[in-house]
Amino acid sequence: MNRLRNVWSNPWGKPRFLVLFTALYLVWSIVPILVAVRFSFNEGRSRSTAQGWSTRWYTGDPDLSVLHDPTLSTALFQSMRLAAIAVLVTVPLGVALAIGLTRWKGRGAATSRGISLATLVTPEIVMGTALFLVFVHLLNFIPLGTIAQAIGHITFSLVFVVIIVRARLLAIGREYEEAARDLGASTMQALRLALLPMLVPAVVASAIIVFAISMDDFVISQFLSSGTATDTVPVRIYSTGRTAPTPAVNALATLTLGFTLVVTIIGFVLWKAVRSVRGGTGSGMQEFATLDADTIA
Amino acid sequence: MRGNTKGGDAFWAGLALPGVLWLCLFFLLPFYVILCVALGTVDPIFQTPQPEWNPLEWNTGAFEFVFKGLFTSGAAFQTVFVRTFFYVLIATALSLLIAYPVAYFVARYGGRWKGVLLAGLVAPFFISYLMRMLAWINLLQDDGWVNDVLVWIGILDAPRNWLDGRASSVILGLVYGYVPFMILPLYAFLDRIDRSLLDAARDLGASPFQAFRLVTLPLSIPAILAGIVIIALPMFGDYYTPNLLSGSPQTSMLGNEIYLYIKGGQQIPVGAALVVVMMLFLLVLMGYYVVSTARAQRRLGG
Image 1: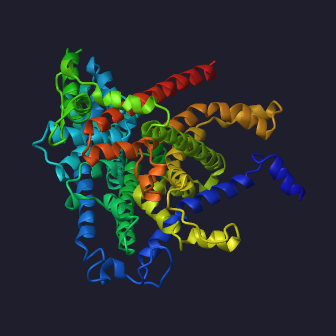
Image 2: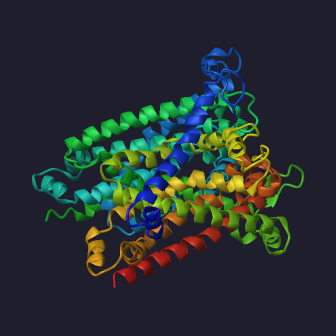
């Protein structure tokens, strides 16, 4: 009783209250997802009660499973396709932009940096509306659908690459390039031989982030979709989340989650490997989490 | 030395050029298009918007419509705007109450569990927001597990329909959806607070709570403000959370109105004008954030 009073009167002194609070938060944060995954393995049609175990909604059901319902499998492929395009275009574009904006001392540099940061604080619905109207009314040679969606994903993920790569560039400093220049390298050679190898961990990290936010994106994908054929997984979850008659939508979400986690974990392991080659130390998870935080803060 | 400074600068500018052009084409230009649609006209027969590219011919009809709706008490726009504001306010406050203790604990007492705890905090970033809402749709059904638990404990006599247009469900969804985005920046900031400051406070006779109140809390104000802005901005434009967890017009937010006008096809200029008005309102919020962060830093810097 006395102990309880101590805890109550000074909850910050010993972190018992905080241990409990954090544990409860983590449970609250993770358990709903596990429940949704569990229902995807239901034998019956319910999405709110446990009804046995099966893979019926993944592959078994001849009409309604993810494998056999084209609206579901198309969505999964559309999500993967957009994420792949986004990573392949955004990373090189963003790395070049980050290096250029960090080293370029001209008049336009600060303005350009401001514009790229503005994309970060612009609510997605604003960007979605803006791109939707631009593709309908001005650049109407670009039809709604995959290309428009990919352009949207590239536009909003560019800033994440810029932030991650720029942070790394500022940490590296200019000494290495200057040394390369003094040894007779051209600007291009200094960039390629001295700077780029040191940027590899940041490039891998930004590829993971771009992949994850592209897979997660809903608003841009929906505003720029041309119909069911170009709906992504989040769009499909949105349009059938309330009305879906079977747990197939849970199976679709679970597959997407599994795919995202596998790619992310491979990326994370790769990142840890290149980072340790480049002399990074300390907790990988710690640096990775802070990296994410710095990206959004 | 080699007289290449100028040439080097052109090289770096050239490297940035594709990205800058991309942003001009797909970020700045679209904003102009929003303005031209909002200030344009509507085809009288097909109801399709006719953007007005020439600023001299801009027509303010859509803005007048929006402002009339916003400033007439009881009008639909005003109701929705006030509701959005309160939902965001409550959800942000609840998020802060959850995020701060969690971030504080992991940063201060994480110890050897830090890696695992951080993995738990980062996990939601890699789970689609829509899947996280889907999970709650499953849980909040009539025969779902939330009702089962509440009836079993005895809080409810009979299962309740949580998805039929309740503000509480929408706010739950907003908090659940956005709180991870607040925890991480708070964590990153709290983790960097120099512990010797706390030791100094304790040495000078402060209780642990006083040390927290007088050192940690003031130092974390910039991070708190950043966290608030990071989650409040996207919440203002959210339309999927209220739609999935309620679907009722009784809980519709600003984002729902915009979505209806833009994607519904009728009166697209009104939707575009709403977007512009929302952006202006959020710019005020962002401006306040920039000013108060600067002020807090100045004060802490002495």
